[in-house]
Length: 200
Image 1 (cartoon, rainbow, N blue to C red):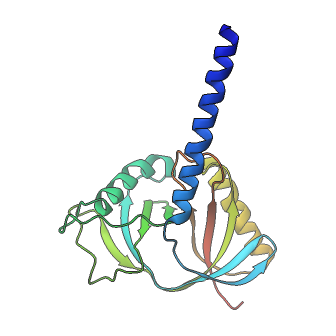
Image 2 (cartoon, rainbow, N blue to C red):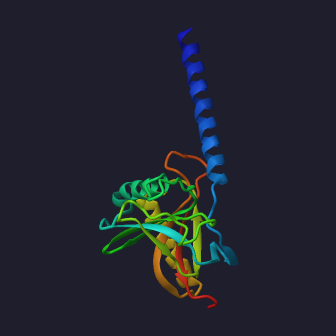
Image 3 (spheres, rainbow, N blue to C red):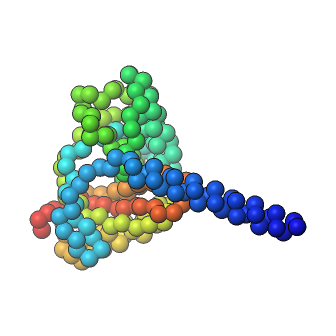
């Protein structure tokens, strides 16, 4: 009798977990995504063109993804969830951009396409700034599973090796793009991208 109750409880928890994961995946899929155009597929690499994009940016002296991501995410989330001069809620988009350098790290949220630099409310947090990036071509490499520091480093090395193999001139540092919230465990989308000279 006890074993049957345990099995039923396990099945109920499994159903709840699967439903929550499906709901999270659907919510993520509905979020506005940063637009880009695929120029060419070269093996595992995708060459993309990104237009100029308005982003909210936070910089951190921490040089690790793990060390800076939580604090930077909270500050950016605070801005879009009402921490601005208009106390206005701004829709969350995807992906979140993260970039490391020897002197620190940077996290960026893409602003919805309906906003312009003039129409964006100013952040209450002086450490959050608004930037409009330049248009660019990037080489992108997608991978699933977790976006842990080790896996990002592994795919960063793979991305740079593939660029070198294909004769692509790299013009900057590698960025990590995360599309899913940390609590989404299945169907995750991660990417590493690097700006390249295109056409070759």
